[in-house]
Image (cartoon, rainbow, N blue to C red; front, top):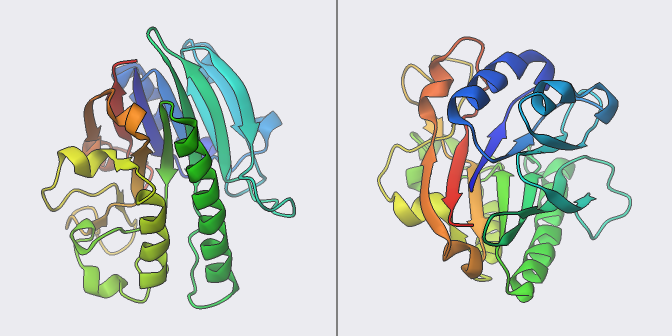
Length: 260
């Protein structure tokens, strides 16, 4: 079972880039972020025609998450628990039924938080505390589960080409990284770094100032797995070359393959 996370940065603008990649890579499950579309306007037929079940949690013009799955989906839920007043579409989860076992998958688009400090940063940290509570519940289930998406967190200095330029940014401030670490320390395995400790491994390059051409990137798209899920991991990777294509997203897919 190959599960990928991909911040597509607008399904209307990037649907061709997304479908081209789907046709080439043929992932079983894709967790999308920043679809920037309400549910009724999401072009689901593009993906259903390719054999995918489609579940969305959309929002007009920004945010929005979705699941595409060639495998059966059960018990789909939308919205991160803990704040019934939160109207931002940033969380979707479902159980994927594999050939050997079922996996609970959670797709997330964590708040950016800039400018920091400020109300947007306060929202980010509060959202991350809610994430920690949901993560603990997943851990307590003692079943294969993962949380994947655009975390808007640069975990460590080696996850940025120029870490000093990010020191006061909400993605790299110490409070942000501490909040991420509190989630990780519940017992999760961060899929990519568990296999690839080498530097210069990024998943995002800004559109500005030739960031892609100079490999001035950051790694902010992560897959966190429970121990039961980590035991199933076969391989993991980043599809870097997609960033160099025509009309790309500023993110690229990150994927994990599970023996599930």
